[in-house]
Image (cartoon, rainbow, N blue to C red; front, side):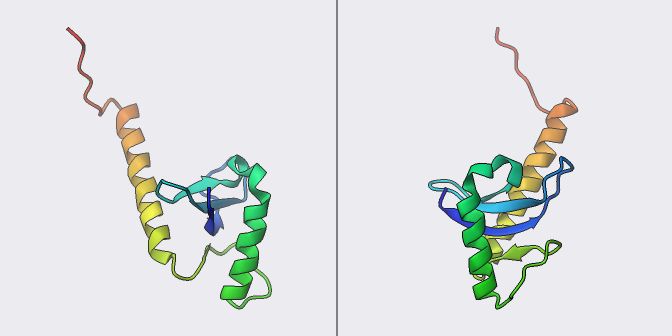
Length: 103
């Protein structure tokens, strides 16, 4: 994990408050629930500091999606990838995946 590039109010209903856009070492950035990132509090602090500085805000709203400048396209791609994976999961759960039996 390199750093967080943004945050958004969580899309999941499990009591977490934010999803963070995580820049991974050697992998594409992805949105992750804050409940899965508890050991990375330093990265949350770094993101919030950078966002206040770069977006010239004193406070960050808990209701807004915040993406660091220059990473908007990355966030869009990560969201698109997330939707594609969710769609594939639904298709698989409904029996939409082709399964070949071994002879």
